[in-house]
Image 1 (cartoon, rainbow over the protein chains, first blue to last red):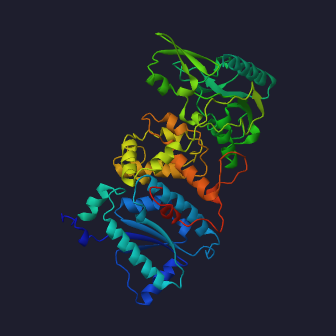
Image 2: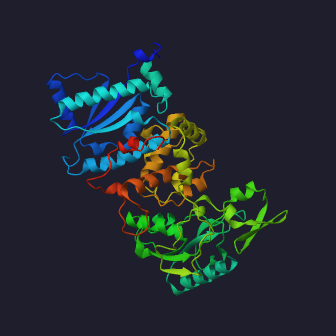
Image 3: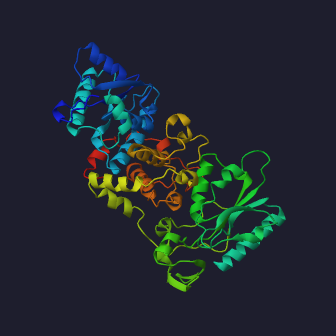
Amino acid sequence: MPVKDENKADFRPLIVAFCCNWCSYAGADLAGTSRLNYPADVKVIRVPCSCRVNPLFILRAFQRGADGVIIAGCHPGDCHYTSGNYYARRRMTLLFSMLDYLGIERERTRVEWISAAEGAKFAATMSEFTQAVTELGENKRLGDIRCKEYLNS
Amino acid sequence: MQRISELIRTRAGELLESGAADQILGWENGGLAYDPTPAFFTADNVAGLVYNSFCGINLSKYLIEKTKGKESGKVAALLKPCDTYSFNQLLCEHRIDRDKVYVVGVGCSGMLDVEKLKARGFKGIKGIDEKDGRLTVHTLYGDKSCPKREVLMERCISCKGGGHVACDEVVGEELTPDAAGNRFAGVEKLESLSPDDRFDFWRGELSRCIRCNACRNACPACSCNKCVFDNSRSGMAAKANSDDFEQNMFHIIRAFHVAGRCTDCGECSRVCPQGIPLHLLNRKLIKDVNELYGDYQAGAAPDSRSPLISYTQGDAEPDVIYERGGAR
């Protein structure tokens, strides 16, 4: 079994990005077609709307080895379903506050509003977030050891 | 209290006799003097109805099952002021058929935390008497006495006050506990710690969890027909938490799921056999909701709308929790 290098310089985080189908996912697409670079550590998961993201999705992502989770949705007011991102905003604010209260690094979670026209913003946000999580290091506080062994084997 | 207990028993008898109620939901004596048990009474056993300062159990949740179906009759439920908040919240969520319930409000001057009595060395409790804020505890080893305010339950120390928010009648008079604590004091203390200290604190507390699910089962807000933790595919149904993650996950989801609906009745902490201060998680969410979306008391009115199912265009961005800085 390969031993994971604990050296921070070599640490590559696993970032899960939940992207709304109508804005951010199209933004990611635009970043790609515009040949903008963003780290390959970001794994995009397409969701119908940012409010589709259940708090359990975020915890599950952390459990299965994610070091950072970012939720990207339409700008407030631009939701394809009129109001989904407003609900997501309240929900995620409370959830992140809760994680912070439990002593889990708050820098590991983020919400960003990225429209379909903001390919450059998508690439910049993902690079910046990946950088921030890399500096934090491995997610040790909200991970599942069993899942980590599985990932390393 | 003895007198109020008498009054309630008499009134319950009248309600059953007049046909205003087919059943009474109240408390009967449990195996020990300090554990009254929820029970349904009819004319046959209504003599066993008791009400004293150990009746902390919130009875509102029992009404969900009881009012289901066409055949169920009318139930008269004895509710303390803080139980009526839970009752209202359940009405809000259409979990209780209001027409089948007759709410009898009972006054409450604060409920006792038996763990606090035991911690004072009061063993072998046989009964209690109270007068002018002083409690006399009859034990196997003689009578002991202490101020009532020192042995109140956590929820009663910061009582919501203000009497019943939903009831058809009040038996006896409205009472208020002799306590005025800041209910967010515990949360603020934790917030002032560093993230590492908070993490250590919660590891210490949550690692004691045995996943008995008592907090979930006792909570009036946690009343889904299908619970995510009962889903056999969740990988964590009906078993003890196997690691840090599962402890965190259970408690984060449990607390978050009742965000905006928790009336702060404190049942979760009361029933926890491990003494985990679960109310600190719920109160954190209540505090955040109050600070970010305006003061909100779940269950204050039967038509109130939870902050999590509404929004305003100018809501704070999630970054607000970073901006609030420090350990908050």
